[in-house]
Image (cartoon, rainbow, N blue to C red):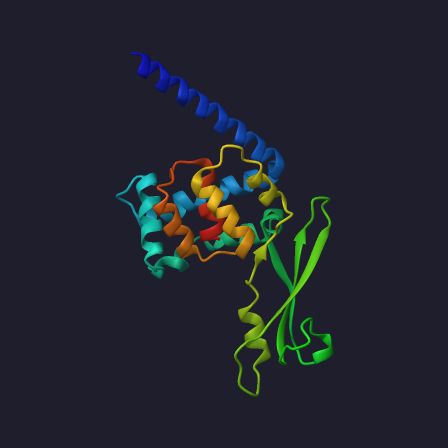
Length: 230
């Protein structure tokens, strides 16, 4: 009997702690952004998971999705909702989560490169992201790329338009860091994210399965949507 009482107390304590974390997360993220993120989660479950895995309940569908992805099975990638992609693209949430390309060009002038020993030409991407005060911040990166003369600049630039990076000062990152009761997976994920930036979705799927995350968890569902789906 004492064991049952103890179990009930632990469950109630965890539930209260989780609700507190969710409240703080949504407070930092903001009402509109929280609603956008919830919409994307609900749409992914109803528009993709139920159609892709009609014979599975939602939790098992999430697991099957992660299992297939961790094995590199991505044939269904184009089945994700295009309207939801556009919905996120047009929202403020995107700039809170990511640092997105603002302009892309191929630089041929060695004096305009950050690294003096870089070969030219180099690909340069100027990205923008939302700052905590609501203004835009900007950063510029440069990288080498494979090419043959003559360079098809339009094709190269077009292929990089979706090369996003992490917005480390945005409300989404701050909201994730505010979670007090972080799971082992979330701690490892945030450490990896801080060190490496964007992470291969297949690796995220593998790590989630390896850590046996709760696929009904509020935060896990949102990470799947932001880090894997969209």
